[in-house]
Image (cartoon, rainbow, N blue to C red; front, side, top):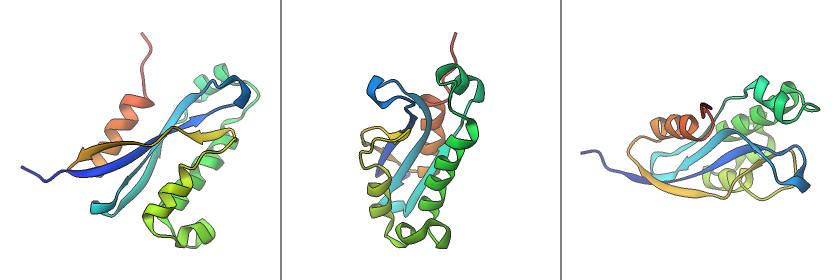
Length: 131
């Protein structure tokens, strides 16, 4: 049996009007220190976004989501934040903010494969099929 490690994750949300507190889940960010893992995965459904917030464009939201990816990966494209250790980058990305792209509260779980868990969470929390 594979050893399971503690991981933390947050859902990435589009919140077009912060005062209304309505949101659309578009991605997940997952951090697992023992596996030296910090990644985000997202899926932006253009039709759902347009129905939810017709004044936002997919390209605007994608810019924010790509910034999440760059910060997770670290390096020069991520600026000063990209130089921080993984845990600090995760905390920075999941800090409360009042912008169109925000994260949920941080949740925890156990996983033997952080990459697989990230894909599972994306399917369960973002790719929800409506009946």
